[in-house]
Image (cartoon, rainbow, N blue to C red; front, side, top):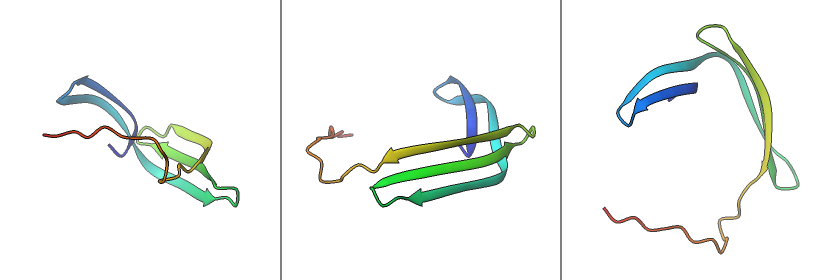
Length: 71
């Protein structure tokens, strides 16, 4: 969506959205296996959105199984 906010009226129609038009996003991989994301961006109405997020990267060798979807 290239947007920090959007509203879906239904599955086929998005009536409102707020695209990011300026700013920066920094992604750092830390030694302990975590990722830190820091951002300071602006939407098209000049609203300033800032924040940080840190999480552990999931090990792809995990025993968690994912459902198989056949179409």
